[in-house]
Image 1 (cartoon, rainbow over the protein chains, first blue to last red):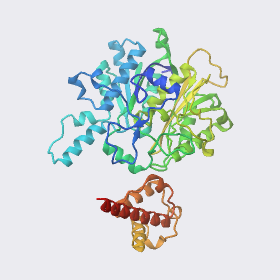
Image 2 (tube, chains in turn orange, red; image 1 turned 135 degrees about the vertical axis):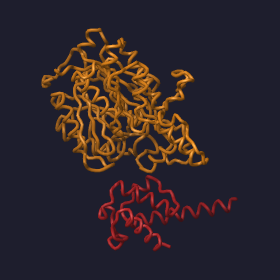
Image 3 (cartoon, one colour; image 1 turned 60 degrees about the horizontal axis):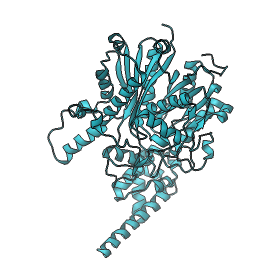
Length: 415
Length: 91
């Protein structure tokens, strides 16, 4: 089976930046942060009080009463994003196509809130049973399952759980399936809803959450800010998308993975550098063709230094020509949804010729000496863009995107 | 009391790092003891439970030696006692 070019023809996003893709992009290009005091959980017993929650979300606007309670918030986000992506792609899902469509989603903790509520009632109130929907609401593949049921998709469907790299691993595998002819269409991305008291307490114990806001690459950064939401992409072979006159956001051209084999929480530079090189090799693209990187950029002291080292190791002198930003400064760290939110941001950046900034930036850190697009978006003619995800556990996944507008200019590409 | 705090801190490091107590002195740095970020948050968790205190993240980040840890805990205990006394006086 020959390798096919794979394009993104639909995007759906629900996040702290709004309830759809248009609101997401409008906030990103304006450098507006969705980080605010947490409202869904009582934070009086927490050391941090801010998060990037989905606001103004009315579940009844998306699900009827009979269905809503079957879905944990993370599955709701997966399905809402998938609906928007499929609608946006304007693709007709015939029975034959549905049989050859893949659904690959990412989620780190699945229905964490359902589990937290059910189990705490069990322990605190000495209840002798939990709700019968606890298992189907909690399982991390619930989002993929509901997407498959909603659209009658009977092809391969599964969920990847690799902490903060979940969505990039999911999108990368969906990309490979479409490229290699194992699927004719894919709905892929991820979702997460991590705002439950027990889970926030667990993050507090990790001591990596900022008390104020997320300031990736700034000298005074104090950590990450948790975020929630979902993002889904529709992937198709270029030939099929062109044949039906689909609007194309961007092309996915490469996917690379690696593992640090080093430490369960401390990042290394070597593993991420190998994943970036692997993505470039997968696309047969030279490093100096890359113009933009949507960084993992968590805002923790160690990640941002290590990621800078990894980028410099791969790109050498070209690192000084690269624009790098962390959109986590705006939509928060979506954990298993992070890669999907950032893939959407990267595709929209290439489509619009505008690179979203690193918001909340205050002053440079000499150990993060990259052009990190402080606070204000900028115009760009970048042709290739990377999106990095580096997970706890040392599992790294990197996607490489290409602008799709018929004006490809980088002569060093073999692709 | 100060000696008891130091003894408890060393005992907790001994338990978390699985190293003998005589390998740890009040002057030991975390680097010398091989305490990485994960060990660090484990030690802090055990200390909070042992002394019934809450160690702020910012304070935790500035601790790199056993002595700094003992001094920091002593201060947190003193602040806690002062707060409790203040609460009693104002009640």
